[in-house]
Amino acid sequence: QVQLQQWGAGLLKPSETLSLTCAVYGGSFSGYYWSWIRQPPGKGLEWIGEINHSGSTNYNPSLESRVTISVDTSKNQFSLKLSSVTAADTAVYYCARTRQWLVRGRYLYAFDIWGQGTMVTVSS
Amino acid sequence: AIQMTQSPSSLSASVGDRVTITCRASQGIRNDLGWYQQKPGKAPKLLIYAASTLQSGVPSRFSGSGSGTDFTLTISSLQPEDFATYYCLQDYNYPRTFGQGTKVEIK
Image (cartoon, helix red, strand yellow):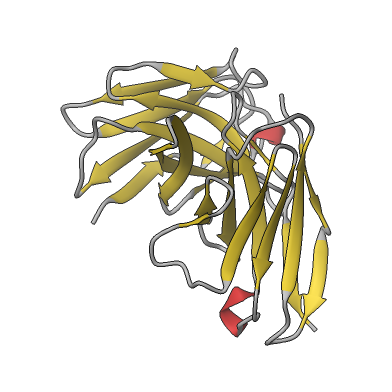
C-alpha cells in the first residue's frame, strides 16, 4: 500500500525559503507525476506544481518564479522549495500522487494518494 | 487558467437526504474533472475521477455526472460520515485548478 510521508520546517520568517520533502513508500515511484498542493487556513486548495521520475516539471504560473520541485529517485523522494516567502504563503502543504487513467484513448488524471500535510507559518 | 465555480458554497442537510453539488468550468474541459472530500484536519480524499468514475473503495451513494462545462456530484442518501467539504478539480490543462469548495453541514 503506497504511503506518502512529508516533512519540513514549519515556521519561517519573511524572505526565507520554504523547503519540504515527500517520501514515497510501498510502491513504484516511476510512472507517475508527483504534486505539491497547498491550502491557506480556512481557504481552498491551490495546485503548486508537479514532477515525474525523470525530472520533468509543470508549475502553476502564479508561483513559477519562486518554485522549484526536484526529485531524488534513489530515495523515492521529491521536494518543494518556495523562495522569498511572505505571510501569504502560510498554508498547509500537501504532497500527492498524480495517477493517470487511459479512458477512451485519452489520459485523465487525479490525485489519488496524499501525504499527511505540513503546516507552514510565515511570520516575523 | 480555467476557473472552477462550485455552488452552493455551503448547504445544510439531514441524514438520508439527497445532496447535489454543482461545479462549472469557465471553458469546456470534456470530462476531465474529479471530486474530492475533505474532513477537518485531514488531507483531501479522491471520490470520483473522469467526471463519473468512482474511485476504488468509495461508497456507491456517491455519483458524478457532466461533461463540457457543467458537472454534478450527488450523494444519494447522506450519511453521518459524509459531512465534509467537497472540491472539484479540473485536470484538462495546466495549471490544475480547484473549485472553492462546498461545505456540507448537519441540519
